[in-house]
Length: 116
Image (cartoon, rainbow, N blue to C red; front, side, top):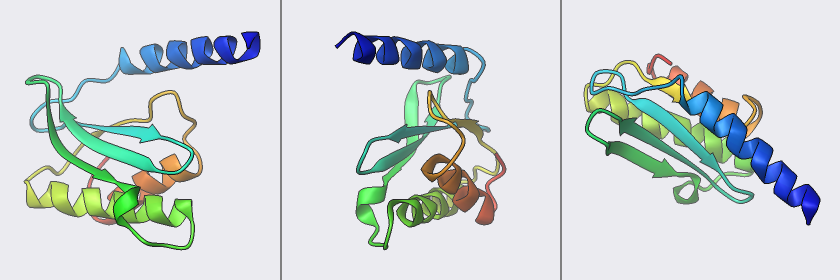
């Protein structure tokens, strides 16, 4: 039990440290990632108004693996953001490493023209 509490404490510390440096605006919202064991969720957030501009989940895509679903999610977010007139975003990976599914979301969004 103590190991789990220590892991959560370190994860929260990474999340707070990362979030202290990142701020989204209307012109350049924050692309925030949440990763669970099954799915990954991405949101474009305007921190000035405290509103979520756009959100998507890997639940809505059918693909062979979770990484492929994440890439499709990134492409979806990229397309919808450009349709809303957002060309740039600040990438907030949260407490997660920029690797695997998190990187796949970023690569998918970049592939559709969203500058991160």
